[in-house]
Length: 491
Image (cartoon, rainbow, N blue to C red; front, side):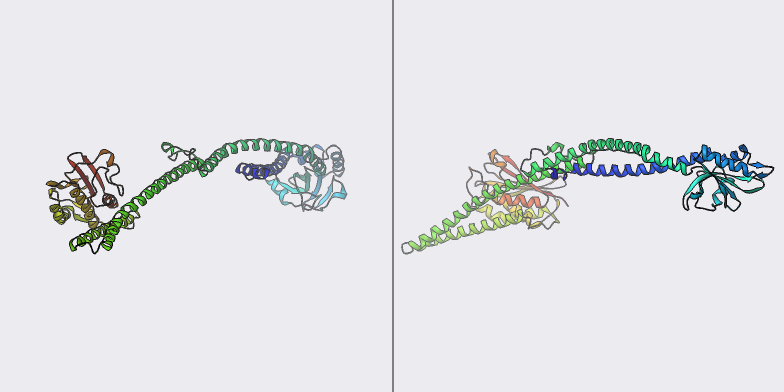
């Protein structure tokens, strides 16, 4: 349980925040201590900038233009007793140490660099400016300096180290105790407050991620309930990456759910299609088998006319079976989009005239008058072969459903930037309940007589029209006939 807890994003963010605060707090403490030391040195040097000159004047170190050795010795002894935080050195003009107030056993240098001394004398506002510490070969400290016996006739310098050994010891004790305690306390409080605020913020941030994770897991388990509704699936115009991710997940989940429903519907249609195909294939096969068995069993009893009729019926059924298989393969190719249209501009009225001429013998055999009422000169951009196939199906279907001595009419009209081809028959019309299923494969009206077709013609025509970016619609005219309208885009 504990191991899984540390694997969560919230735990990792909290650990990262803690480490970050510790690092930042440590750096802040180090920089603060360094800044305090520099600030203290600058303040100390500024406050004691004229200390060396005051010592010379106040203690009467110069008498008759010469440095008073006795007064200097008394000065060393006095400040070693009353102010051990400073150290006083007498230097010659080359920086060599002549005498001093410090412990002789701790002096490491016999001279100091004159560069910072000359810089401070020429520009007293330069601070903090550290100089050499005679007690160390590498340590540098702030100082005060003045020429002696006088600035006009200098023979050396009175060099006052403002932060002597005693000061260092006292500072070390303070830093190691009080300052360390104060810094540790401030760091602990800062870490606690920062960590608490960060944990609250990360909790608010990761709570939405946790909810999104729950929704993903629920969706994976098959529960589509948490997915947003369709009206709320838009990506928010304002929001952070989590809002964007949530909206995208909802969109994806909705599409997946819709695709699953579509797959279920397609599977249901496939089962119906298989059942219908089996039925429509079994019918002509049974008829062919029956007539051939009759010829085999009664061959001696049948006269030539009866044998010829049996063979004619069997042959007609084989043609019907072949046509059904061709339509099945054609519909499958259209559904799989293996058959793509070759779009080109042409005059649709010319094609309609040619197709009508081709179907005139069929109409005459059915005693139906096939006529073109009007034909506007409209250019369309479509596939000629597919368009001809659509017209073949609609005209054959109209002729098959029209009674004798009736008529089937066609018209070509300019409409909506394209062309509308109208095919109207004189049959009994289409029942209202049948219209929504009219373009489904193998569908035939329940009260219509079978015409020898498998019910694939309208489905094929609809798929071909859609591939050409067109469509087919039906206008129901009960007791007057049905009117099919094909729209194709213009050039």
